Length: 226
Ligand code: NAD
View: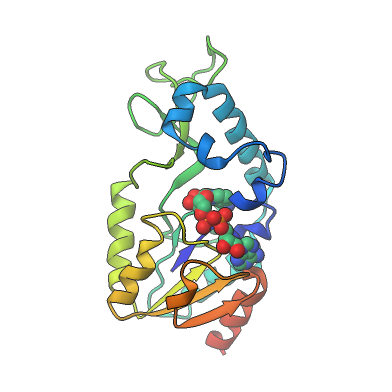
């Protein structure tokens, strides 16, 4: 299954769409979540990420995240691929989560490409790598960047080998994540979409569940768990 920002919306983590009507109404995420934006103005990008990190730290997993933990115990195999970078699935108790777009709470060295800790003192005032002193960046996949190889391969293999593919709270506009549903569909899986509104997937899914993840996922669980 694939989850997107919508499953965390009820935890108070804004989706990108919500973010545009809030504090960051003046910015487009696509203009901040890119390597070019970071190159141009790292302080502005870091300000945006520190704000998002704080939101994520204060958020708690909701009933939708919790239902998926229990669902995993009710079916022979459940592979959870998330586009979310907020760790809320893991904090709810899901194991083996495939983080397709990284994790906002981690730093990565922009020079070495490895997850890194921060140097205690920074000359520039921006986070710097404790190992090599180069600039740190959030460990997330920005627009135009490649998906981490392990996540890409594991998600593709799971999509190609599932009976049911459930998409929860994703607008399905960001590729290659959105292509996982097509991959599963092509391999014969039943596609289910759970979303508050129609998406790019709606026209070709087999089942549409229209509503909030925090309300509908517990109902789905109850039907399956019996
Ligand atoms: P998106 O913002 O493009 O779309 C969110 C989708 O969730 C929409 O289709 C919306 O209708 C739906 N939705 C909103 N509230 C819902 C609810 N309560 N229940 C069910 N559905 C609901 O998000 P996306 O498709 O995940 O893609 C945007 C990218 O932004 C992702 O790749 C992700 O990395 C990043 N992102 C992550 C977070 C997070 O980690 N929580 C938050 C914002 C953006």
